[in-house]
Length: 190
Figure 1 (tube, rainbow, N blue to C red):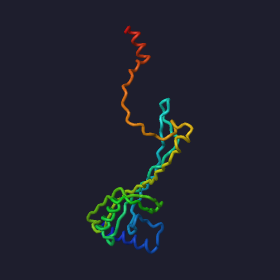
Figure 2: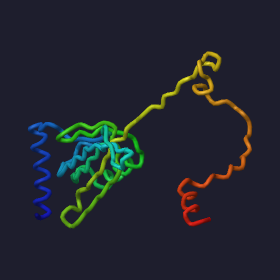
Figure 3: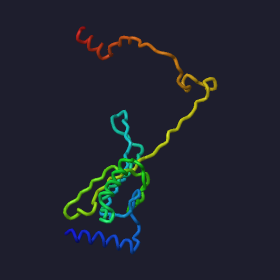
Figure 4: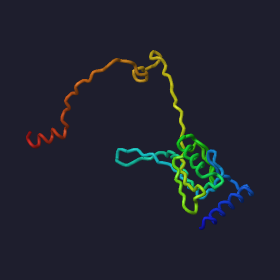
């Protein structure tokens, strides 16, 4: 596709989209004036695993993985490719969560992980890039206060830790040989 054809397709898509108000509109952070080329959505879960005595792995539930989007898009000449590229880098380095609205879903608490931009003789006046975004899962710590030791039924087990001073290491006791080792020694006459 020639440079003029690429520009014409991008311009036509922008004009038609604005005239027809194509929904859903796509945007992320403060960016909305771009042409979305490809959206790749990666939503997955991980099955928990734990060992069982017989050597097999047990699974009893799943954990949601953070959502990921890889978004190929182009910013037109009107958006000034150099300034737009700098704004994308500022967004990535800030680490500030934002909302990303794609054609399939609106994602909350996304951060920009990478910006891959390329230009050639056909796209030298626009910014064509691939963005990788990931959801961050925001948690809040929870703390509690234990009741006083005298109000607890079994304070040695359920009470909070107490200051007991510095402890000295004690030498370990010699370990008895295993039953199998003793049987072997008897068998060979040791």
